[in-house]
Length: 241
Length: 209
Image (cartoon, rainbow over all chains, first blue to last red; front, top):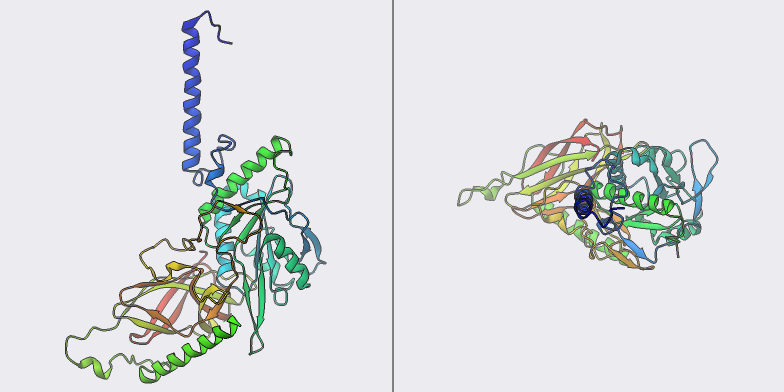
């Protein structure tokens, strides 16, 4: 557009370009520096710069959990099969835990709740699935209300068949063990990380236990941006495996 | 089999504690503080054993849960041992001191920071994974992602001058058979029993995190 035979004008427009670049840079820098405090505005400004800021772990190649289907329980209703893949455009937080767990599980869920508050309206795009590793005690009358203490609309997942539970755990590289004790009770041990699944059924990030709510929120924002880009740019870019 | 060694260790520990208790103060809920010990009146100015308690809190208990957890930081001036914690029966049926640790029998807590006190970032700053986050290959489990479990411990050492944090992922006081849910803003009284400092009542505030 700028005509080469009018140097003065072309020069001005060049400066305009520089100005745009500077503004863009500043936006990127600001977005990078205060991603977590900024309320969900700067989507899409920094295509690549963001990826490195992910606190969670990315696997290469990523895990594909799209075939995992487990029963979702609701009190007083029949179980419904739930595929551990979120609705299009959403993300799914998955945690293997149990309700008689006073430390790790509620810490993680309370931190997730905090992260949702930081995310604001975008939190509606994050679904939550809590898969019990203790189906004996975590019945349909216990599990959904436990989960609802932390998040709205979470999926309470419970399967009686230990083999089915283990197959699901294997898909996420999670695990758990029930150990009978001499007094007739049992102890439960379990992996305490969380997984974030995108709408293709790919685990896009794993969080170690203890990740801060701020980091959760900023990771979720980055991953939502990626989901948006993937959807906008055609689904061919990130095919799982 | 590593399980068995856990239990062996636990039994050994409790025997040790019992022995220690036998020669020391009276654990059972006597209200007279037994720290006015016979030896204390000896030579140089005796230092009274004292434990400073920092930020005592309990998480709001989820619906349908009968369990709660109390967190706080303990700093003993002389070196001490936490022997137990109790709450009124109007709050919970019983109480245990618990350690959350890797289940593989290594016995180390997942969180190296449990005895390092100067880090005041309250809840979740722990768990330095052995590797920084980033990408990692195919199907190897995540670093530090072994199974974790809670186990009761019979006592907790408090080295002199060191802040020992009972915090998520490390130690906590577990409240068993809660009478009513713990609601944000509530307070409850927890009686801590120390080997040297005797009993101390701490007011714990309930909050979300």
